[in-house]
Image 1 (tube, rainbow, N blue to C red):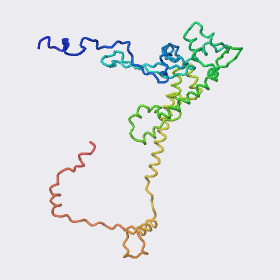
Image 2 (cartoon, rainbow, N blue to C red):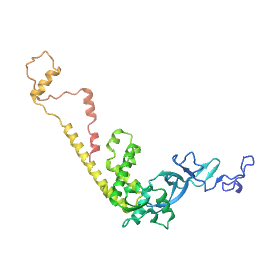
Image 3 (tube, rainbow, N blue to C red):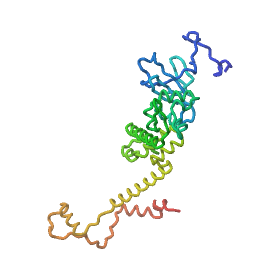
Image 4 (cartoon, helix red, strand yellow):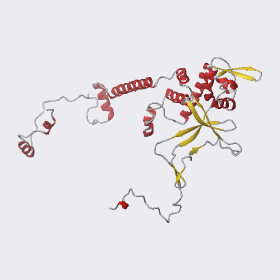
Length: 340
C-alpha cells in the first residue's frame, strides 16, 4: 500500500460538494441555553435580561444569575460532561455544556450579608457592603423589605428601616421552606433515601411498596436542596433544628429495622407451617362428614387406624430375578455421591 493511501493522509476536498470551502465548526462562544418562560415576556425588546454575578453562599464564591427588570432572579446552572459537543444547523459547537435557569429566592442570598454585618447591630440596607456594587444592587433592587421580616428584626426611624439578624426567625422560616420542598418531592414521586438509585430498575409493585421512602428521607433531601444556598454553619444549624439524623445513623437504623422485619416474617412463616394435630375422635368425625367412606359399613362403627401386622415377603418375578443376578458385584449409584 502506498503512503498516499494510508488513513493518516489528508483526504482531498470534494469539489462538487456545496459549501466545502466554508467553516464547519462553530465558535466556542455559542452556547445552548434553556430559559424559563417567566423571564421571556412580550415586551422583552424594551426590558432585556441581564447576566450578573452575585455572591453564592453555598459555593463560597460569585455565581452567575439571570435577572429581569421587574425583580425576578434565576440562577444559571451549568451541566458539563467530557467530550461533548452540539450540532447547530450545519456547524459543530465545541462547547457541549448545557445552561439552564432555575428560580431562586433572593432572600437566601441576602442571609449571608445579614449574618455578616447585622448580627450585632441593626443596619440599613444602604450601609451594608457599600464597597461591593453587586451586593448593594442585590439588597436594594431584588430584596423586598417585607420578606426580611422573616429573618431579621426590623426597626423604623422615619423613612429608614434598620435590620438586625434574628437566628430563631431564620431557622423557623428555613424549616417552612424545607417542608414545602419535601411536599413537592412527594407530589413528583421523587425517590429518596439510600435505595433511590435502584428504584429505576424495580419492576414489582410489592418491592416498591417495601422500599417506600420515609418522611425523614424526604426531609433530608429537601434540607440538602435548601442548604445549597446557605452557609455551611447555617446549614448545620438547620439540620439540628429539624432533628435530622446523620446518614450513617440512618443506615444503621435502616439495617436494624430490616433485620427485625425479616426475623418477624420468619416467625410468622414458622407458625403457619406447623401441622395441626387432631385427636382420633376429631379425625373420625371429619372422615365421616367428608363422604369418603363407603356407606355399606356400620355408620356407628368407630374409625381407628389399622393395626400393622407382620409384612410378608413378596416373591420376585423371573425378570426381577435376572436383573438382581446381573447386578451382583456392582456398586449402587448412591455410592458415587458419598463424602470421601
